[in-house]
Image 1 (tube, rainbow, N blue to C red):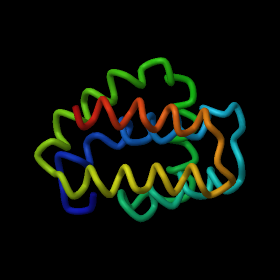
Image 2 (cartoon, helix red, strand yellow; image 1 turned 135 degrees about the horizontal axis):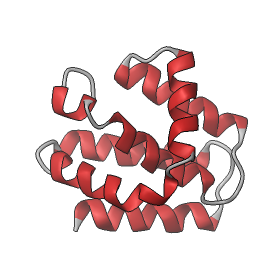
Image 3 (cartoon, helix red, strand yellow; image 1 turned 60 degrees about the horizontal axis):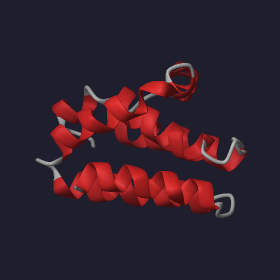
Length: 116
């Protein structure tokens, strides 16, 4: 996502969608938190504290996930490689602490909205 100014403005949308995967099994593991933090540290150059703050902010607005998916779809349609990388990262987040069916149901829901 680096060097893509229009994607940088959507970090809250990326965060909300990533959080929706993490919380879909009603458990927030240390591995998932680390994955979340690493994504925003590496892709958006946030500090660890900024990433943690973003996590807390999106946790309180998770009901807006569908609108964030629509925002990302509108922009990511012009960036197919970034869309594929983000979906790959969502998958990595799912498998980092063991696979739960609820997580893949959410993944499939997001995938269908982003790609179709």
